[in-house]
Length: 149
Image (cartoon, rainbow, N blue to C red; front, side):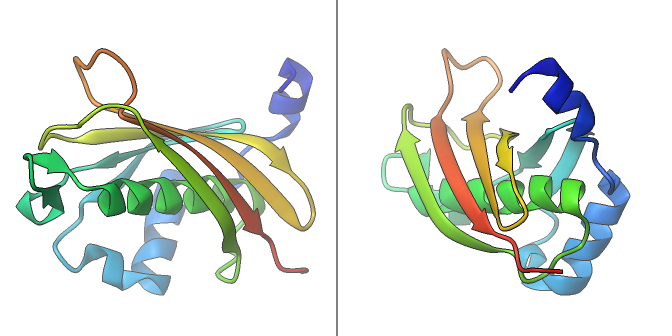
């Protein structure tokens, strides 16, 4: 995305707004405590931190694929909300993920970048990373359908 397009794509919700919305509309994501926290929002981007517990492990002592998909999906939804406002009925139409490395039981950081934000569709690029790792644990692309206003 060009610098001018990114400048025009300013977030309209704050970190607190996103947390309040998710707490109200999706309280089930905090069933095991607050493991998902938005840490940064900027033009066309958002970062979310996931603090997994042993429930999120698979055999081999690595964070499970479904847990990483959940993080990618919630973070992609959050970056869209941050830029279009609290639209509860925006839904995932596709999510493709590439698992690149085995993440250990430690926090994952999820960086989302909006590739396209149209009136009806949004496309998000997603990287999941851990501190001191050689590279990303996973990379994903998500497409969301945004309902008409």
